[in-house]
Image (cartoon, rainbow, N blue to C red; front, side, top):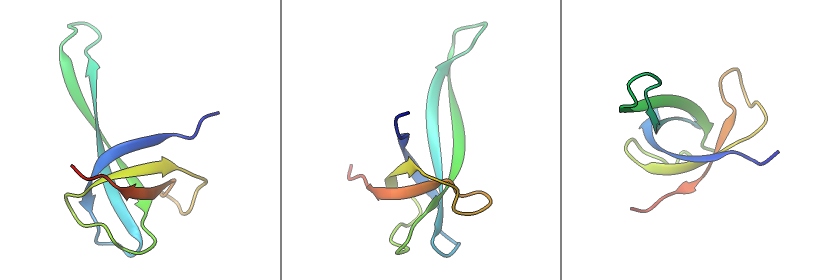
Length: 79
């Protein structure tokens, strides 16, 4: 199975070595077919506390690190 990777925006970095990343996904409504935006939050492991709120980052799925953390930070995306 391929390793999942996604890009999102850091919404919180208040925890030690943990960031919360909001990933926005555009989908079509099942009945009306209007494009709607869905947001999902992921807890990601940030080993060196180098991310700040508003940064665009790339995260990768991994084995469970804690109760909620199943993603790790790969790198910052420059835009």
